[in-house]
Amino acid sequence: MTVKQIKPTESELEILSILWEKGPCTVREVHDILSATKDAGYTTTLKLMQIMHDKDLLERDTSSKTHVYKAAVSQEKTRQQLLNKMIDTVFGGSATSLVMQALGQHRSSDAELEKIREYLAEIEKQQKR
Image (tube, helix red, strand yellow):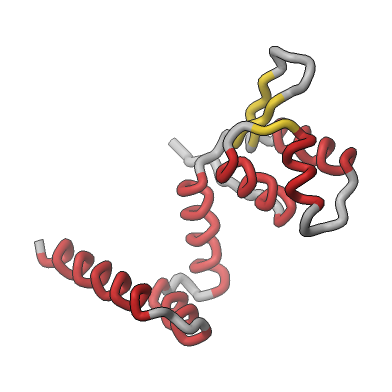
């Protein structure tokens, strides 16, 4: 069985992020959030959400006059597929290169570094089993 690849565009990811955070929303609600940070027309948001529904990225509840949309793909699954694709295409399949690049380009807080250490210790423990 092949896993369906999730390939949202940047604009689709923005909409998915809103729906993951807020839960089910109307087009107007999504548009109002988007328009706070970018110049997008209501009809553009509507059309994009209709396309996303056709691509099975969104589910649509048509039981009332105002349609309500929700994400049809999980945030975790989407992140994992996009990250795997980035590791394969940008970092030559090396998760280590990705981590080293991220840590080298980003100032991490002490709390973040501690969380990373804990995660690495957990991975080491699992691999020794």
